[in-house]
Length: 225
Length: 225
Image 1 (tube, rainbow over the protein chains, first blue to last red):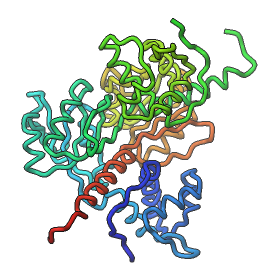
Image 2: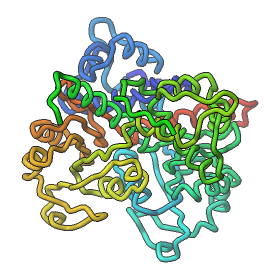
Image 3: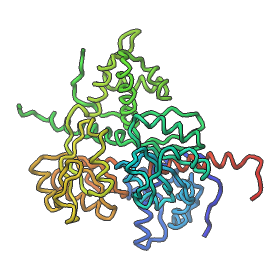
Image 4: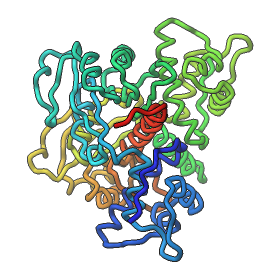
């Protein structure tokens, strides 16, 4: 099997956000012992446009086999490589509350090579304890440990009030990418990668769409109320 | 003050995903006692394009005051209304594990009118217990309670294996919108709203961008290793 190991090229975000969906499907098909898949099958299964799927997959550099489509294992590896999930990505997490704890325990991200190797908090009662096999350390150690362990990724699950200060500490230690769960816009130097994972953004889409649907119902010949 | 209460019109998703960011900024400015804000100030603060911000805000129906810009309170309410956050949106959650628990305890979504009023699980040891003031009920009660309480939103935080089955139960009870945290593509009738909040999508963008940055570093005149 031909496995692509070229360096990763910058891909558009909407494409990147679809890749994990493709991988979820491939995982299921693998269990069903399917060996080849065509891009229009993927599109059908996921309710996506087949031209878009074909274009997305071509961006990984993979080439399908005429009539057969893509080798399932090869496509899986191409997607993993494009997402940089064929590496171990080590991260420090700051904010060992319930959200931090949920992320530390989230199996689906550890399956993608993402590894939180230490967590930090300023709550003395948490320090020294172990959550999901990860030790909680005092926040005072954060910067030095980023330097000494050469950590590139920081996860922020603190309350919004402290998030900017934690981002500054992370960057001063040499963090290159921040996964921010705090509901605040972080101000960082241009070369720092910020990925916001804010539930409110997803929630707003849901509640808005619900309002539109409910409105279209209520605008049918109306009953008084 | 003029407050808009027209029915919500369907807005594009990228716009909806920016609205919570605007609200975060407005909340901070409110604390700083600022009363008016122009769209280009919002754009500058959030590192966005000012034409895009202006267009986004116009979609809420708000009209700015010449030279002053938007009244902060009025803009906040327009955004809340567009997101349907000026209503209480009641939801049932299924899957009272660590992610479910984190969502139940997440203050920032309860501030937006989102209210999980009961949670369901199939783990007998959890049933009857209280997490974040929310009672955990047996999954067998789910469909009947959706009907009797007229619940529109279901939150799925189960493992991927059971997510589809839970979605089916929710829909049979009359759920109109599903907020899905399980890493699986749910197959649902066309009239059901699905919003996927999957950490893997956000993680993939982060790790990909990091790989691109690391590659651009490593392609400098190379040291052997």
